[in-house]
Amino acid sequence: MIQFFRGIFQSKLGLFLSLAFVGLIAIAFASSDITQTGAFGGVTGTGTAAEIGSEELSTGEVSQSVNNAFRAAQRENPGLDMKIFVQQGGFEDVLDRLINSATISAFGQKYGVVAGKRLVDSEIAKIPSFQGADGKFSNDTFQMALQQQGLRESQLRDDFVRNLIADQLLPIAGFGVSVPRKLALPYASLVLEKREGTVLIVPSAAFVQGIDPSPAAIAAFYSKSAARYAIPERRSVKYALFSKDRFNETVKASDAEIQKYFTDNKAKYAASETRALEQVIVPTEAAAKALASEVAKGKSLSAAASGVGLSAAELGDMTKAALTSQASKAVADAAFAASSGAISAP
Image 1 (cartoon, rainbow, N blue to C red):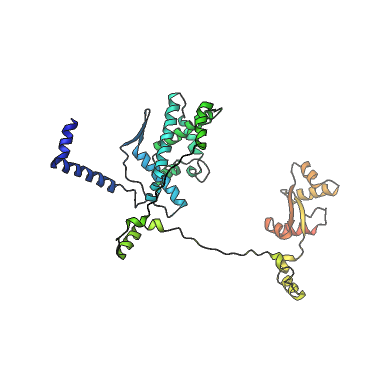
Image 2: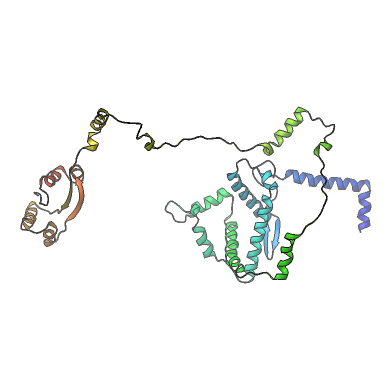
């Protein structure tokens, strides 16, 4: 069978088929959107990226996770594009994290470690982004947030299940960890290992002899690779701190200026009378006069009010203007006409 295929590839027809196959691969890579756009769209959601036990990690979940990680990184670095993100290992980091999470989840489920629906619900309800104006979980807000992030509810719940299982397993796995000496010694010895080698430096100038690119070619290359040579905008800011203490000795107000300021703000500094008041409201003037007579006999207002089944309300410290706005002008006039410690006329 191998000889058969070798014979085909050595023929003209086989050479044509090989070139056509390579061309299809090139078109597939060119159609993947991982270079110039802001999203990772080179894979679809129908394939399987990895299989861990009975669980399958779909390419759609990988693509969505890569896009979410890219958007988070882009908020920290607005000049970042998907090409640079992938080149810096962003795709591999996300894929490794998903595989590790799914592996831990599969291991936990195999040995009976689970995260139930109620536990997942409680964790989702704790997220502030899913809470409404009253501080409680809002399903409408939850669905809107999922839609904005392009997530499915089932996908989010699967992530919570994996993370909750990992939270149960990983702390226990770290307790009392010890490595046998025979296993640790070879790794520790690597620090002491020394090697001798030869380094050959090939200067780039050796490859550019006779190459003279035109200004148009240089401009086209720079335009295509602008992200490699551009840096975020930076600004130099100078500021000064001022404290009023530094002016205490240099700025002196005259008596005339002080008097003018006091005159202009006389109402602010004018004296005002404040009284601590108690009040009892009764249905008739006769009842009020009877209550006042009891106070005149030596009882306190509170005790006299208690004797007829009422209670005295403490109004606190109030000015005449405040009492006028709260009750009426007649009440304020009566209260402030009385002497200190006395009861006013009804």
